[in-house]
Length: 301
Length: 223
Ligand code: HEM
Ligand code: SF4
Image (cartoon, rainbow over all chains, first blue to last red; front, side):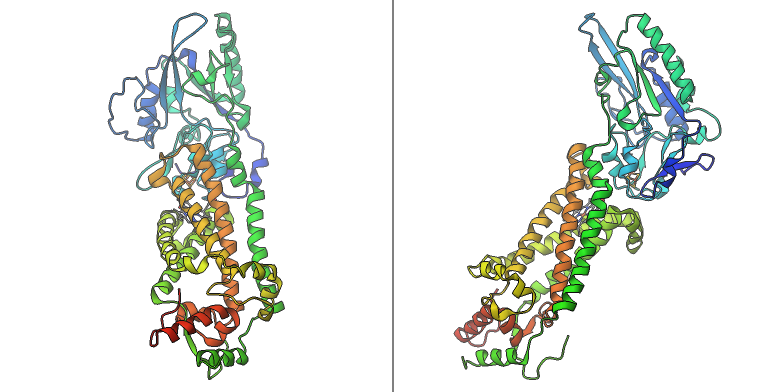
């Protein structure tokens, strides 16, 4: 996607983030209510339809999950997990719509080396700008949710755009529009938090004491949130991380301390070399050395 | 380069294969450094223009690394025996101040390579090995799924730190060549003046001369 002009960019990869101080106006959230999802994959189909991607036909691997993983052509994926609840002894079919979480603190954006290849809009949407992407795959390493996928040729990063091109003109994401049970809803953050609170009251009244909203603080919150019946164990939902955060390795690698220490060391070595040259150089070979060598070579010593 | 004394004798120092390998490694290293730093630090991203843009810089970098490794392997085989630490190296190291001020008269006689050069040889060998291993781990086009993402995160940090250390070594290496006039021609023409050998690598020069006497007519340097 090109960076949509109708939304204001507040952060941009590999560029100074001076704008990041601007407060988000009209933050948007896509709320996915796992308890309402029937696993029909209308959202997955709508995503392919709207983004005009072609996912090659694969093989049946014994699960409804198809394709088995996210791909550069599949920005969202219904993940299916069968779990026997030890308390009730009943089998629960846990289905989670996987895709970009649109973190408030995006690890992909922090890791990206290409100016403007990843942008964050003031409404919270994190978007990849393929014309600026160099296909290095750093975003994959930066992401705490294992979301970005790199295409083969040309190598470009792809993921859910939260339908930034639809949101930019006042519409909602294609998946939310297609969902027959309203398990996916979209609106301002305030509206969605309110909606989620209502859903949690309902779930708790029906015995899901641990029901909760998934909006992890480790990445300063997300703009895709889940209502989870078992929010105390998010890993049950196909390894949804309990405490996602940008890896400390990525933070050290991308940290100002590493960058400036490296630059300072290189500058110091260059300056040191020049100073050394001026102070005690050059280390010339004298005529006497040549004379001694000649004597040695001619066998005079 | 200053004018040589008219009566300077020429001594062979590096054979053609070594010189070719050296310059392949040098060129690759500079290109790797430029393309790597462009990705390491965003204000340097403009350097990718030298390669035809970010995508080509990203694409070429690992392949240049493979060529560099092949070149360094050649240098390694040709230089390793002359880079083994010698008994006098310790004394030389303890008198580093004299070495860095050009007071060779206070230093022990040195073979083909001085301890600083040996350190650079072994240090680069280790760093290149680390860069190769970490570089493959983070080579997204072919090895994206060969290792886990947590491993790749460590790989990125290790690769960038090893690269910075290698660049620091490279700065010193280039500096020493300009600081000791008459050194560059060893890698360009393959020869040095006798006086250069006498001043900087007297033990080596004695070896070359002794070798020549033993086998008259040969001028191959002792490697
Ligand atoms: C030995 C073989 C090498 C291999 C296989 C290799 C491979 C890679 C790869 C795959 C990347 C990620 C970007 C890309 O896909 O192009 C990278 C980045 C980088 N490389 Fe290398 N490389 C090698 C040697 C070197 C050397 C000798 C240097 C230093 C002169 C160097 C400096 C860098 C730097 C600074 C980065 C950027 C790291 C960052 O973004 O923080 N590499 N390398
Ligand atoms: S692959 Fe990811 S990290 Fe690399 S330039 Fe593209 S968006 Fe940025």
